[in-house]
Image (cartoon, rainbow, N blue to C red; front, side, top):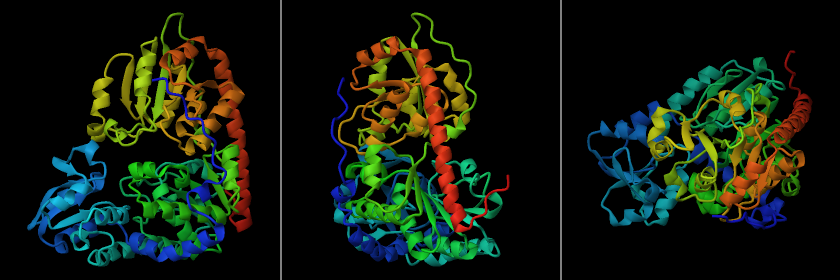
Length: 550
């Protein structure tokens, strides 16, 4: 249980190591991918068009549905009302850890060739390409693979949604547009509003429907994930600057914008980087295939070179060296730091009382973790630490309410009582105000394999703890964050995941001193962010974007 964090140097040129090199050939290759982008991601993902497609276009037959997520829940309801269609089960890349979904058996792709069926229907708004590639690789004939959003019978019905959105765009103009594909943010809308005037800025959502929400600050138009609508919207709005919030499986948006609107400066906020993650993690988390892993890295390298500015939650010497291979300007930004609220009164635990630990952040289901074991694997260690006189409260940010209890019932039952207690997500501001009840925020995992992202990443969990004034307990594998914690004496960095050693470090810690160090670290991050915003403001000013009225 005391496995050490892996000791390996960060690569000198990770772009080259992953085949994204040399720049001249890579940038030329991107141009050849854009027609495919419009084919796969051009049409609007509209629920009314989907309903008509299911009712009027799908052929009769025996079906498997590929995908065990929220899209399939809606799709199965539509299919249940369609005479002539029988659904035998669900196909999913993580079938071994799912077993059953929506009352139906879930089988792996590799099982399909031995089964009797007419069609496999692809059920995802973003991953049809990956699903079709996986099925073809397993030997499923192409005529049995039915896409939805690239199907010739779907497109005419989607066009009705496109015309409706075009009416919403008519007559609108903007100094700037925010194109957002990610529900998670590095810079909040409030921070963006310091540079981009809400009265002259429009947010264009390219998020999946399940993630979509309107901004409370910027006018928001849902483009239903359509690249064709995105192109139309920017032509209509005629902005002087584009701000892109990026996501790993939608890195094509940056290259698309740079290709069709090279005259408009692009400021990029990538939430994560595929070049920093091992291939099998990209498969486990996102279902990316070898083809789309390469394309994803290709597009992010292209955007890193041609964007006017990149603002990311990565930093440190290794990150600077990696980005130094790109010609674009880049700057670190610390997420959530601005969200701090006055902490509630903290008092140290009395002599002999347990140390009070907090985990607040993303925690996948235990079934998912059987396929993705290199992160979020801390629970066995935490259980052993708590046996040494500590308590741990877990607030799972991905467990958003009773509607998705089914995915986390094992945690709810396992940690209903005892020193570890499990909770659903609470709003971030509420979470920050609760941090005064704890002594440390947990951010320590075992490392089973090399993951470059750990060397340079700034986790939202880490920033959230720092924002709330809470010292951090983290493993030394998080290189950049560890360096900052050590520099400011803002927590405990462990280089061995032995529970007894961790418990001893907690017991001997200078809690008051660490809280002072955490406050100093937060101020450092705030100052850095303000300088980054000034740089962003200078880019906007050069583009002719008028600053907000004070």
